Image (cartoon, rainbow, N blue to C red; front, side, top):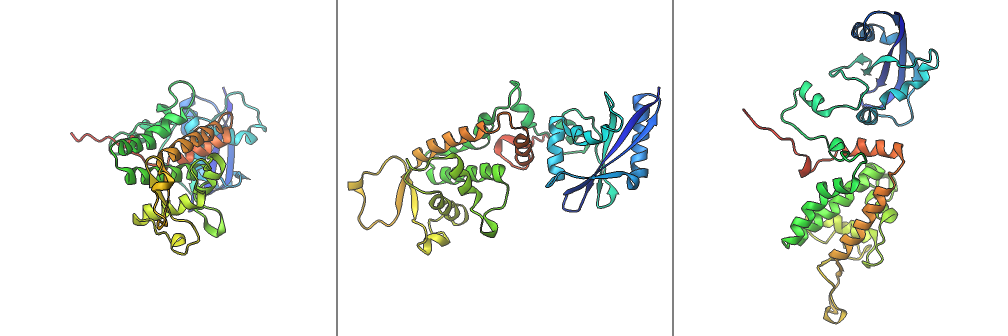
Length: 311
């Protein structure tokens, strides 16, 4: 029985920006496997004649892959189905990179099986798919993911009294969450650093007695130089701050001390509340969750090391 089958295309430039969506359709009969084989052959042959539609603004190959991780990538091409209105369309998607077909993996439109991807592409070792791991209960467990990727190591350092190292890791955690929320503009072109923007949005710093700018400069000094003398602190544009574990009574403070000390435990508690508020913003927000998948896929952590066992 003949049916309409579809070749879809992502037209991608060298920066992996998706500029255009393309489609062609054919009438064919035979088995599904025969039709898929026909589509693959035609995809390599006919892509230059595809009908083009502008891709959504800002779309990248990574953002498309995020939809594939959830099994929703075919919805991107729903506009093309209006011509035929199929009930169960048979289709494939081919990436055209720098004007040429670029295919190294074939899969269905079901959620991408990353273990299968790694196996077929010859990846060395095995890495658990964090998206599957933290979706086992039927809902995605943001808090457990953040805890496993960042907070467990912080607590291990803190409980063993490695307070400076714990602080570095905790500030790096805020960096990562800010990147996932706002991207990697990093404060370029006069923008407020995403680190500060994330704190502004989700964390009440008033119980700690510091500002987002002061914490940002502490972060810069500790992570880049392991000291408290960032460029803004040296210019006296921002107050120099450092950590204490517990409160320092005012009468115990030296009148000659130029560093303001804040309670690391209070900072942790307030940021933990902020992480909870941040996680809550993903409820019923599909577009934001797609962006989360795209950006978290790029992060690395001890919880997601590749396991390799040589024979």
